[in-house]
Amino acid sequence: MLGLVATAGGQAQTAAPVCVPAQLDTSARLPATTLTVTPAPGARDAMPQTQISLLGAAPKQIHAISVTGSLSGAHRGHLARYSQGDGESFIPAQGFVAGETVTVTGAVGRPAHRFAYSFIVAEADPIARLPESGEPHGKPGTVLHFRSAPAITPAALTVTKTSAQARRDGDIFIAAYPGPGTMGPAIFDPAGALVWFHPLPRNTFATDVRVQRYGSKPVLTWWQGSISHHGFGYGEGEIYSDSYRHLATVRAGDGLAEDLHELTLTANGSALISAWKPIYCDLAAVGGHARSAVYDAVFQEIDIKTGLVRYEWDSLEHVPLSASYMPVTSASIAWPYDWFHLNSVEPAADGALLVSSRATWAVYDIDAATGTVRWQVGGRTPTEHSLTPLFAWQHDAQPLGPDLFSVFNNGGPPSTFEHSSGTVVRVDPGTQSASVAATVAIPTPIFAQTQGDLQRLADGSWWIGWGDVNESSQVSAGGTQLFEAHTPAGSESYRSFRFQWNATPAGAPRLALARTRGGPLRAYVSWNGATSVAAWRLESGRIASSLHPSGPRADSTGFETQLPVARGADYVAAQALAANGRVLARTNVVLAP
Image 1 (cartoon, rainbow, N blue to C red):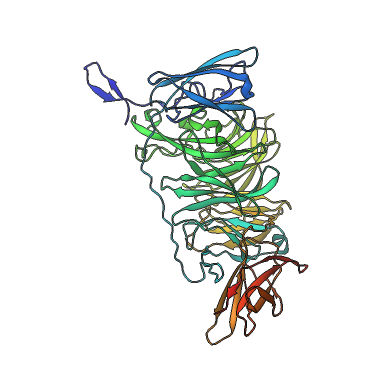
Image 2 (cartoon, rainbow, N blue to C red):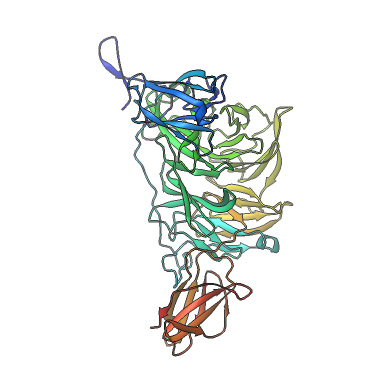
């Protein structure tokens, strides 16, 4: 409930909750120390379940930590170290109380430098979750089916344009929803044949499936969970090896759930994720209701090994509510004001963090040590100016080099540009200006109202995921369209990507036998996720423990390959072969019907 305050007449009335700090864009680094702290000093948007993150000093240098709430009193707890060795979090034994001021004191270094700061705990808006539903059924041809893997039923990917260059640029990584077919992360080859699929339970969505590095090895990552009609997700991030073994799950901290918009692994073993924090907020100053609610869009840096929050950046602490292009008049307790809509955060080569805010039409360069905004391109009050808007309602800000970044420019709604495109922006700090360095588009314009991404490939071409439009495209550096593919009508994908991918599944290949009507017995073989199978060879015999190769080898024909079974075979198995004929794996032995 909203907090109550006493009036002069002795009656209680609902207080208008303040959610923004007295001063915006202050540093999260404590003066005269190396510590960056979360919640930030002066913040008014901390969650009751927050931990106290102390980042930037070896744990043995941090001591004498005391945490006291103005209503809840002194808090017991314990210190938990980050696996990187550069800080720790104080984990309270009990949560804080909404509306109270929490004071943190302690010391850092030898000799000790004492510090003290405080923050205010917000009152969370317990909005009802309104999950979207999947649509598993589809028209014939829109959903893939395999005899050897009946549980694998993803939406089909249809390639309508290709080229020799596009065929060399790796596999396609995509997670289509809300159907048709089962939802889950998928990989397709350049011809549109399925390589790998990870089916998820009904009404569990996946987004942002891609290749990253965890430690020194390539891994698959994606987000999965439920998607609310409010426009964000409740879920977690998954990390799988190149043998499709589960390595880690990334979850948000401080009482939040991981949002669908970002899961970026860093070189130090942490993950940058997005989260939505609905809290009560007085919006009268920007034309809304005094007793309303807002989404405090945040990103967190999570220590993957420990699950601890190393750092949290809150949009309400750094950007004014007045910067938003979203109308505020319809905001309410049930539908908080989605004023910022953070949809990407990426580390730049200089150590800064690049953040995209769809609702402010701006990209922010964030000082990772302090959380303050170094520069801003786009929006109502940019630090790097341009004569005209460079993008609007954008997604996926990606650093490309010094003073150069790209975005997927949605352009609406409401429509600000005639169509969506990729936009490359050059920043000139010397003149405090920004300009369009390149525009990536296709001959037939597409207007993608939501979602989308732009990826620069190794050969200089560009990959475009069109978000809520069920298309993906590739465009050469010179502007020639090289590739086009689509998932079934009615489906969409938050992002899609291309990567080179080599994988050998930990599980065994699958074999199914079926007799066609009036015809011979046939074998159907598949190995979900394998990338090096060139051919298959059957084994058969009268005794399960004594099988011998039977019939010619058959070239692999995609996810599933058919082979004729020799007459008189009682037991059948299949070998997966590499291009040089080496046996990669063998299926289980199956009794012939």
